[in-house]
Length: 114
Length: 111
Image (tube, rainbow over all chains, first blue to last red; front, side, top):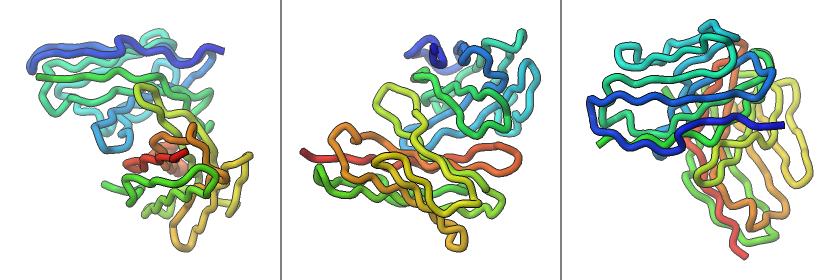
């Protein structure tokens, strides 16, 4: 069974530029999560999708971050414009159902904002 | 808000000995707890979990203990192996399934 796929693996941009990350969850997993992991901290939930609907985006900085999962499968997370403090690893995870507690993580996208 | 805390950023043990990683939480609504293991340049991988109706769960060399009254859980690895060297994240979730992670503990197992 293929795992959660993410691309790109690394991205370096200058502040005020835009960037987008892509995630393809495990086949059949209805729930998709985006996390931000800053160096030295645990992952912090940004947004949770159930199929193509948003379940929780309370911690998403909506002035600059946006995410979509239009067809309920893969998802994109966008930052526009990026700030220095956005430098982090962005992790995508999926689970079969919201009540399934175990989430399966992708390898992450490491973003550096200069 | 630090609802899940791992107070030891690092731990070093000798191969063959026991590794004990600790985690504390503050939210009494948490009822499911997980440990994830993370190697460099990879995403966290699920290791073991425990629900609040239990106080112990064992899977091979890995055992998780939950003390609800103290809001404390620990992961025991016996015997420790060099391949166990990684960062271990404690995570907790409540009925709303909003999972919270600790900051992680870097375990180094020396041959």
